[in-house]
Image 1 (cartoon, helix red, strand yellow):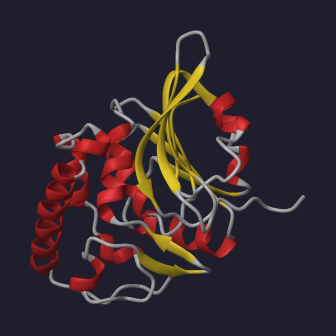
Image 2 (cartoon, one colour):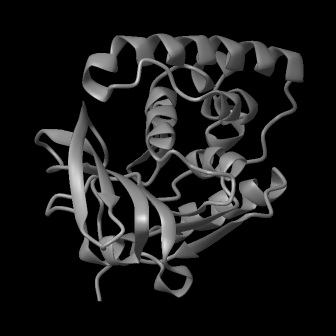
Image 3 (cartoon, rainbow, N blue to C red):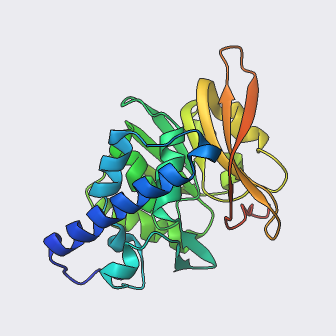
Length: 232
């Protein structure tokens, strides 16, 4: 990832503030689907703090970097729309001591938002170049509570399981991967888009109860890149 050219922090802060207002409007507009007219103050503070422009490799203008839409990051992958980042984060209801598994590091932006809220984030990325670039920028941004692994995200990261929360940032076509359900702690929450690459997809909230039973609820129609596993 190219190192960003210096940008006046005041200008970036203005764009982030405008983005926060737009995310708040989107939350209200989609409340009939999500059941959440507003997102928590902690989530919105994280969206306001994280400099999205440093996680986009082609160095867009600030107006583009803070637009409330996805952006390409190479390799056929994208950095998610900030509203979706905020919604998925809010759905996890993260306590400060949470240990989170993220499947699909991508540019590192969603990972940074999670790290603002959780005690530790373990992130898995299938593409080596994205994993390396994301780790570099996350370290440059000073995050000490993030680990990144280049591996098949559908298999999770069993070494550090169980997790209080799991977020999947790519669409799983065949249902929720069993390894992720297994690695979710009792009482834990999982947010994952489900559906085919070119068909309807649904952002889904999964919850594992105290007895280990996993159930899921549809949240919002979405469009994500597919969750692709690594060949054996």
